[in-house]
Length: 227
Image (tube, rainbow, N blue to C red; front, side, top):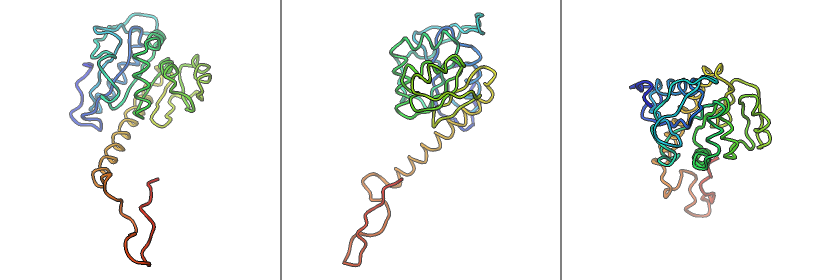
């Protein structure tokens, strides 16, 4: 998404993030997270239901239109390192009626990839059955929907539950953007560490541990399972 040139450095250099939105999106809730991600070095795609442009809004007033980079038919969660769902009342309401958009969100959640939603964005999380047993925040009018879907709702500017980040409103964007970049950076570092371990100890090789080969005095304890 060409809102700004991605930073040549940054903790998210070479990483890709999808922003899922359609007509009616609250413009600032899309643009500000994109700026923060690109400043950290990430490449960002605006993913929508159809090709072309989507219409942004400033509350109830039309704002600028934004070009779509990919459609939901063209992408999968495996293509990206994280997902952002901006708000605006009409935006997530339209998205949650589309089975492809709901399936894409569910795919990110099932793969345990970072997902961030602000304002009315958690409506889409509810539709994807992604809030059960989790703690979230949102625009206050969504709290009953979240609770009915099995989630806990708190009135805080941001709530981070594992790799699910939620926020309430445009005024919370500075905190939301900071936590978004931090969450993605941590996830990237953890995956890099996991890959290093896999390369050092391939699945076919035994992990280092007490020897269980030898005579009667040798330990019979096998390799310990990782916690």
